[in-house]
Image (cartoon, rainbow, N blue to C red):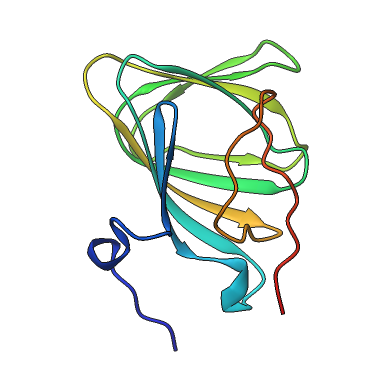
Length: 132
């Protein structure tokens, strides 16, 4: 059994920030459960371009509002607490956060990230092998 809190992760190597986002990586590949689980916060008023070419990501929005744009199709989706989106086709996407406050979401990645990943210039997380 694994039990962790975001308080104990804060300020450790599992607390990763880059640009306008911060990811508290609660479950990682090294935990050997087949997925990773993160609490991600994105700054208000920011526009963020992502592309998970190597991962499938499921996102559950718990705080904040904004817009998700599928850059493959141009379709825009409103984001608000209770919204889920699943990037099952490795879609290039943009998350624009409203000025009213930060966006906080819970994210699941498969394959799992190992914890050191940050987005490259194309918004992609590299595929990093889970160490033995």
